[in-house]
Image 1: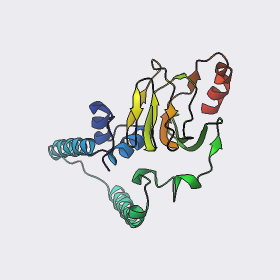
Image 2: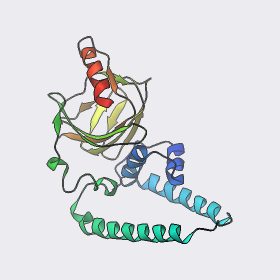
Image 3: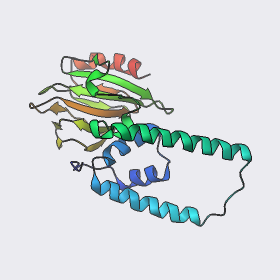
Length: 220
């Protein structure tokens, strides 16, 4: 697929290639790259550069126990690739998310957040970031909010718009505490997103601000 028009910064791609991103952010980059030929091409170039740099390093000796663990893990990864490859043609779920989504997004235990939004938490990163899927009904919206930490979003299905534009399948967004927006799903279909939040959102409306203490507790 090559639907994405909104991309991560080159610094994020470089960190992803170097393996230095937290798991939560790496999931977003990996998901976006499956939708984006341009970023996939950039990532392959970065990987080649990294490979050349690694070839210039002097190898360090490793114990027999370390080698056995490495080869055992490689065997596990090969098995995972075979399993994922067998179902790839029948699934629209990005490869990196199939450990959480076995069949379909619609089979997940969605939790009602509001009349327009449902969510399902996938995992928590070691840095405290929450990894979840958000589902917005056709024409539905999230109340105007800002963020108490960085928020990474990748559109999986459908599309939504906010004050800055329209975002479609594969698009990557990064918001921080300086951003305030009101996402609204398009009316033709529901929108499903992968969202990573490093802090809770903060509603800015007169009535919705009453929910902020609950959101902070829910992110803890």
